[in-house]
Amino acid sequence: MFQPNSLSKPFQGTIQERRIFHRFQYCTVPAFAGGSESGFWTKLVLQVGQAEPIVRNAIIALGTLHEDYQERRGKYTPKAIEGDSRWHALNLYGGALHQLNQKLDVPSETNARLAIIASILFACFEVLNRNNMAAVTHYQEGMRALIREMNLPEGDESSMTPYSPRQQAKARFREIPQDEVDEILRVFARYDIQACTFSKDRAEPLLTHVGQVPRVLPTNLSLSQVCNHLDNLLVSVYQLVKSDLRMYRYWKADSVPIEWQVQRREAVGVFDSWMDALEGFFQSHATNLSPADIRSLLGLRLQIKTAVMMLKTCIDCGPETTFDAFTDGFEDMVSKVEQMTTALRMPEAPPLEVEFIPFTMELGIVHPLFFIACKCRDRDIRRRAVGQLKRAGREGVWEGPIMAVLAQRIVDLEEEGLSEGEEVPETNRIHEIRKDVNYDSRQIRFEATRASDMTWKNFSVHREVLGF
Image 1 (cartoon, rainbow, N blue to C red):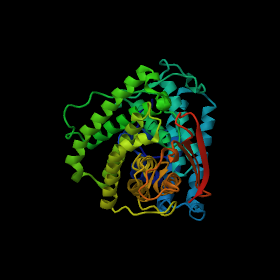
Image 2 (tube, one colour):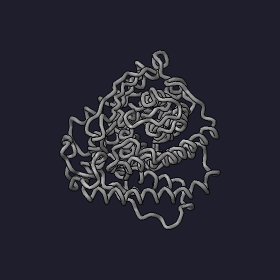
Image 3 (cartoon, helix red, strand yellow):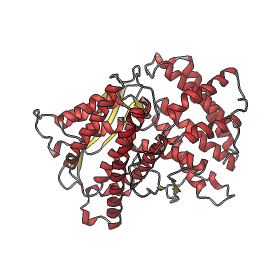
Image 4 (cartoon, one colour):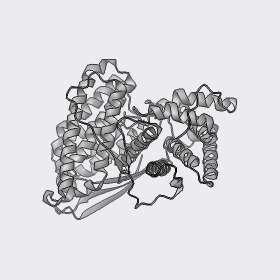
């Protein structure tokens, strides 16, 4: 895609820009690079940034915003975000966007590829800036452009053609990246999962393949190999749970196409076996892991367990009482988080105030905890999940303290009028939740659906604006 450059080549720019570029490598990259994305962040983006002004300016903008974010420790109040540093970062970002748009006025293969790399940096900037919809727009455009390019004949420069929702092209997601295109696709795939966990209805279609279940416990794998396995599993399972398969939740099993039933059954077997096998790694290596590694790996494990629960309820599982079968699993997941937050001394924090846990772009414990608080109707377990959300920090678009507020409201809605110990009836249980966070007004707008009858065809909608 791009000719490699040496990172020893002098960086072109002012003293301040050189300082930010250096800081980007050692402070910003670790916050944004997932367990299996290091090739993109530590090599490709830095090399291209040295040679291409657009990517260089995007790096400086993201690095400047990240420095400002760390200095105010994530605090988001009118006074905290009015500093000169943040406004400087916004100006740099606007300039990089303007430069890219000017470049794209001249369609070429090189310009299209620059736009693909820049879209990742722009998406990260908007996530850090708490503008989640803009972040989704950036990564989605870049990911779709990359998929189009991967399906073009060699030498064809039509990658500048607009995206069509009817396009059926898919890109192959390799378990072990073979080149820089694979590295970039891996970054996009992880960002797509994060968007799917929060609000996106469908995953961008990829061709995935999960290898055979290992015969021996992978206790001799390196940490990076384990992270790579977990990432592969997560991408594969979301290709199913955020596809046409999810429409069959309210269908009777005998009405669901047999190919979907077989695919789901085989996938559940593979994912369950992989998770059992990978537990051996954690049992034998737990004492050697750093706090950051412990948090990262626990997050990935809980993400996969959550996704597999979603997969198991994709066909003929209309009643919300279906999730009661996972109560033991919910208990185990919350207990593991409690052990970690206690061991790492992770304190509770109110929404948008000073963050005690460093920001990370990785998928982690926040989404699984929110899922448990909403889907587990055990009174004690779901409240413990809400309590842990307050300690969970910020993971990309997921902010634990804010989600704790919404999760508690869902609990209150479902348990309204019930005495302690009384089971939550099916008619009280919420099926789907759509949410949008307005950080400036400190409000969550959400919609929650309940089944009006047992046909699973009619639902009532509860709409509310919740302050925090």
